[in-house]
Length: 222
Image (cartoon, rainbow, N blue to C red; front, side):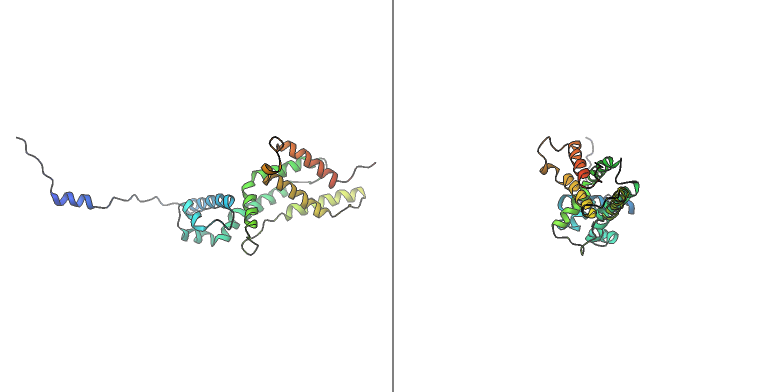
């Protein structure tokens, strides 16, 4: 008869009671952690707005501690500035600097570029609008700066009227701001404003360009 091996009861009990070996998580770089926080914050701010988003939720989705989030970004207001306001302002600044003229022969293309710019950054714009609607004020965080765009457009349009020797029929500064607001609304509220089939990009832009041409541009000589 073969010998039967009997396990030592003490050893068996120790094996059962021993805690499982925890896998040590690889250390992440600061760039990786910041990137995860930014991505989670941008997504939540766009989905819920500023007021309804908590730093705890952002930290959980980024898989970091809330303490680490505060260490990198200070507080929720500073985080909102870093991931929403400043990136949007940077987009506007770069776009404005890239345009040599806001009016003239290439003006129709410019309006299409603005529409596409807002469409591509709709999540940022949505987060800003929702945050303001929920009561987030300038005291909470900074506001988006459209001024570089407005001032460049105004200077170009004033020069066009001056060259034609015509006095603008109304406040062009207000006109440019209303035009921008119209295009922003068309992007943000596209599904609400236009019935199915009427919200195509080219359809919207064709109407917008004609409205702007009649309202802001120097009238043709008769």
